[in-house]
Image 1 (cartoon, rainbow, N blue to C red):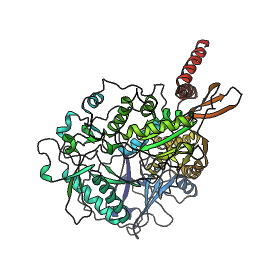
Image 2 (cartoon, rainbow, N blue to C red; image 1 turned 60 degrees about the vertical axis):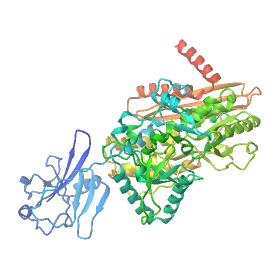
Image 3 (cartoon, rainbow, N blue to C red; image 1 turned 135 degrees about the vertical axis):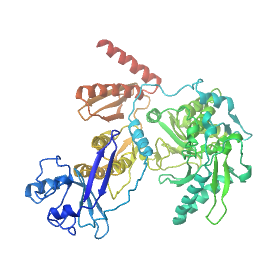
Image 4 (cartoon, one colour; image 1 turned 120 degrees about the vertical axis):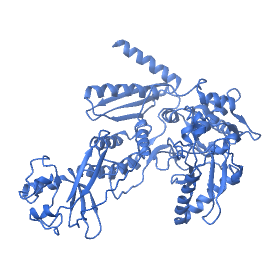
Length: 635
């Protein structure tokens, strides 16, 4: 008989197994012929522990087998049966059983052929990692983190990566930076990676052959790499046999939201070598040297005239020291009929652990070197870039034009050209290198991350979500969908909080990543997902402050319940003529499951932190801290 058994391990992982054995004698003793199988019309048998609950058992069943079938023919139990059903049904081939998920586990129905009694045991061991999923979960919750720490203003000379950058970085004859990779001592323990990289190349070639359009863009991307001398072909006998060598596999990533490069080739620095170490394992990540996105977007909402742009191929404008380029070797050929070629990547490579630090630190170095000659542009380079995206502004059009000229020149001297300029005032953009398309605001170049957009034509903030139909709704697909809602300012917090509460329920039920949901949660998600597209209709004014305000006030509100707590800060300003303006720059809603009082305390703390971050200018922050101190003294 088929037996479904669920075991809960101490590590909170659930494993399900189906054991099959011959039990023809048991079937005969119960009055059921072996040809009848499981699930004859009018009867559905669920096999479970006899202590599972007060169910009516079939009196003819041989209980010595340890399994008891539940007779579901009675009216009362048939009603209970439908309540036990969950979303999830596996239909095998004709004549094979149907597997249905229930609250008690999986049940098997319809006729099935019993296997032979003598089966050779087989042991299978499988390992599934969900690191990327865990990373997306962490990133989703980290967006809500509010801190009172000041933005990164000074570099830490005690940091190992900072020390190495300062000691080894230099410029070439064209002004481009040459950097050294911050490697750990374990670099010599890297294993062999050529065989693994070849397998990955063959797999990618098979995918490219099935999709000619992808193949064409892939070839163009690599061709551009080679033409710009960002990679150089080498003979295999030129590769060092003394120092560490590493091969990087690569794959394609589609960027639907990009207005320039729809396909990007990403190099996998996390691919394990034969020793179990990857290239990323032997690199130091380095500190964050730029402001966080919340600080940048809050400042962006205060300016009268704003500018945005990004650096073209930022990582590839920074060269890697020659003696480390053997750690960045790739394999390539245009099609499977040609011989495999070896190439050295000569620039900072997207997909490696130290790349973000090296690229952003080199950009910051431009600002550090020009503090005296270009103080305004230098300050903008240091604090208003998020990776390669610029979001900044000024109070007048004349100041914006001057700032744009300086920001165009300084990075360009290091080979970093700014492109896709945009402004809410078209007169600032007096050349052809500008864009009127919406600017995407995001934490990283993740093509799956959609969300907050700035429309320079209407000078408003919007949201962009796309329909995402899924054949099967699971915890994995729900998380994938929710993670696309990127909301650093918390403007759609009331909608996001519902998704977070749903995620908490999934975790409490200990549902696996690819397991279907209970019926009630399935219906709840379907309803929420349908209404989620309404976020695309939301439009919020970018600017939150009047021109030349006579006073500025911050008004904070917070509240809590058993399920969630939240806080919101309103900024109110007025000029000397009495013209007032009020906006909601930074709401935050956090899901929680503790008591109301504790949630209320947390909500108040979040409100205070939000007010501290909202007062990003020196005058506002000083005023806020002064008023806060007075209120605390009253208490």
